[in-house]
Amino acid sequence: MNRRELFPILAAAAQHQHHKPAAVLTDSYQLKALSSEQNQILSQLADVIIPADTRSPGAAEARVSQYFDLLAEHVAPLKKAFLEGLEDFNTLAQSRFEVPLAKLTRAQMTTLLEVVSQHEGNPTNGAESFFELLKFHTVEGYRLSHVGQTQWLGYQPHPPGLYPDLTLD
Image 1 (cartoon, rainbow, N blue to C red):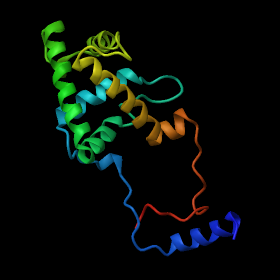
Image 2 (image 1 turned 90 degrees about the horizontal axis):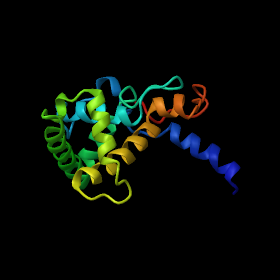
Image 3 (image 1 turned 90 degrees about the vertical axis):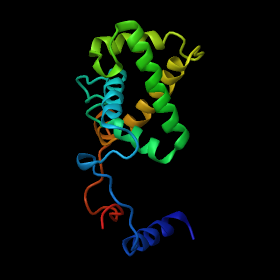
Image 4 (image 1 turned 180 degrees about the horizontal axis):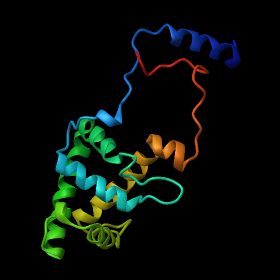
């Protein structure tokens, strides 16, 4: 049997599948691992890393912070790294701007990210290490988002009915 014969068989089998994965609806997403404040801060930081431009929306509109929450829910070391990184960023924000991280303006967040990115590739402290983690997962979350797929990467979803729908019950 060659792959051209196998694909129609797999597609037909998938149509009769009883256990289909649930779709993640971003509009009604409920945070599972991060607090609202942590989510908001991560959303703002991610949006500084990937801001909106004429071609596509930024990381905030792509809801990259929901990706962070999903990671934190399922990968305990990442949750710990996110929480400790936010603490490190908060300490840096308070020492540099005399306000907590949650109250920084976008310009101050941009400055904070510029400071922690100076040793990218060779971090010297927790905030610099967190920046590398934050940047990597911001890009990954954006790339995997619907906005990232369709507007940034230009992927055009297939027409309805072309393939069996495996995401909805």
